[in-house]
Length: 447
Ligand code: ATP
Ligand code: MG
Image (cartoon, rainbow, N blue to C red; front, side):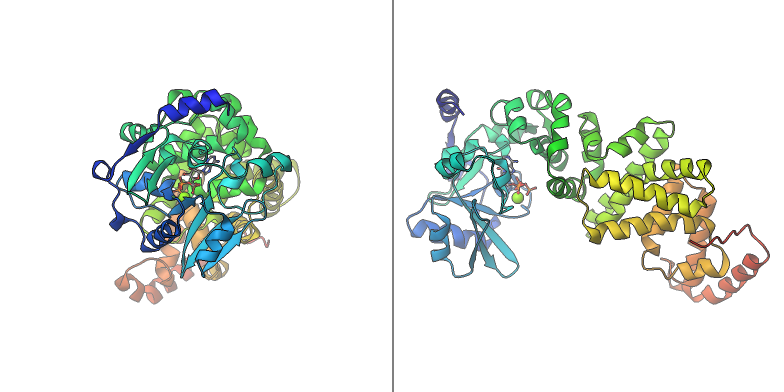
């Protein structure tokens, strides 16, 4: 950043005294307050910053509280017994209070995005510049941040809020706006494009025109982001209870195709409308569960985002070759997942159940009778069945098939049937078994 740019930014700094803002100590976690006070009492500057201040200003409950200070990590460690330093070059202090961790960062000057969010061992190409510039003043720290609404600092010394970039106006007007020149800021860190979409969806804000304009043509820069970082970002985008809105924004700005290129192709293809409904339903399902506080697995989400391409590819395999539908599905899945992994690192603990959910679709389509009932006990049955319901709702599977599995669970007492229905189960199961034997189409090809 040039001196001129810095001067322009400095001219806009506003300090809002305690009486004129809505951040109250009673809304800040006790542990964060403890950290702030102890730093202050030791003679350091200390501020609450980032999402915590933003969310409190909006009257929302923050996810976590981050602290910045002019104290060096070693100073912080000396002040807190329950403190661990993480990262090699960009050291951050984590102060542990049971399950709550307060992250304490020393003011930084560089636009070194990778180092911002506590990843730890991040290497920069140019170590020399980094060593010269790693620490800075509070204002340098503020200008290095991405959006104006993320650059509000709550000062423990006098309980004022320092607004470095007109963030409060943007909060009032519901606007996501980058600090500085948008194209430059995206070049420094393309993930900021995804973050713009994330905050717009999460807060119900719009992306400011200048901030949004360069995104479609710069979206391709995401192709060079490490797969593991994209995975982390996708989790934040899709697991926060606003996945449907996020999806719409990502599509609108041409970002989605760089995260899930194969899904994007399928959405543009002949069956595009079915897939759009299918993905939307899956995301709605995830959002509903998140908002009800139920557990959600990324496996289901990734299965849904890959299924359109897997399903289409499997059909091609089945036509071209002699393979069984189950084999075709298996091969299609291997191919599609491999291509997706070039883009996004999906950890095995999610990719394994993700594959199972998809593979089970072919069993749900083919199994009848005894094998079907055995399938009810499969650890991934429930997820695969939910998946089938969504396919049916989107027109990708016969509704009749989904209904059959619903009845089967009622009969078995494994479904979400109420007590009365469950008590009836043995009788109904018997009847169904007989029907099963009397020869429904049931090609039980083994997998
Ligand atoms: P959330 O509530 O979703 O965690 P957040 O604003 O706290 O939102 P984080 O990803 O936790 O977001 O980042 C904390 C702060 O660090 C941000 O508010 C922002 O000031 C800064 N920051 C994070 N990532 C970047 C980035 N890529 N470029 C610039 N600043 C960033
Ligand atoms: Mg945060």
